[in-house]
Image 1: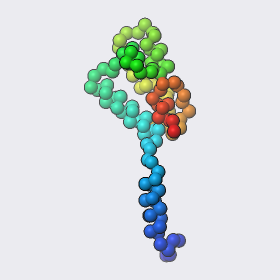
Image 2: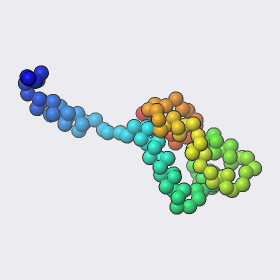
Image 3: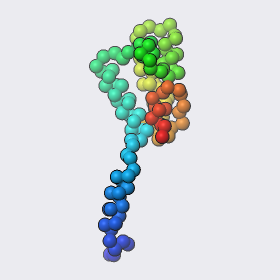
Image 4: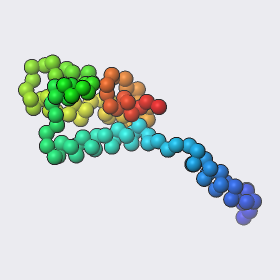
Length: 113
């Protein structure tokens, strides 16, 4: 059976040159899954900062974190990882270029190109 290309070495050379020029970037789904895994790992080592502490440290909060912060909830509620139940996390982990737009959401930032 004859090959369609008599000499395939040019294809190997082209692939090598292309991979050197094009920067490799992780996809948004991978970034989202890694972020979720890191947060879960951080929770295993102890409680997360409260959203009030996070805000005081200068970090922006997403819509849901702000809602928890202004609600008269206890410290345990402030330490709850809102991302664990957020639709943005689910979309971010499952869809490249997911249609999510919440301000200050890490999963939205992972979608940016």
